Length: 251
Image (cartoon, rainbow, N blue to C red; front, side):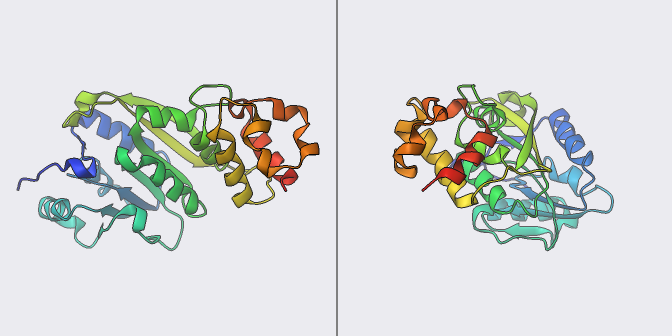
């Protein structure tokens, strides 16, 4: 059975078995009991995941043609596939579950925000992203790639950059390099006044990342607070912890 690749869905299917096995090894280390794969595509990783012993496995796929192909090629997947966009989906398990995917690059930021929404149930993520996005999520303060995604994800997860993936490992080859990262839930989330204020502060601060912090976030603090030394720094110089601490001083 054949399938077509849909540009509109950002489909670039992994074809390098060595890379597939490396991703599966990173998953197996975590001994998941429940596992959700986002965007199984033609089943490059799926065929390994469904064989993991004692696992409750599900995969979510928007493309109906790929669902048909997967069930035809791997009949054991019948009943384990959710035909929906991950961004619109409800939580597929009652208890905690691991998330894995060769994530569509055109919605990678939205996928990470969805992970943050579900963080109380997702202790570990192993995901492939466009290399720039993967590096951004893993970046530390002081680096040019450190930004909104870095701070928001790292407030809740420890991020490890696992390895690069070359364009030629895909069909068709994307125009960009890829990277695989692992997120593991942090044991201690920094104390903050509220999550909503934390998100607001981080997004506002990085909207004008070249400016001194006090100019970018003036609307969120009173004048006296803004005279503090920390507001002379730029957003990319602040640690996750410092952003969390500043929420207690917001209006």
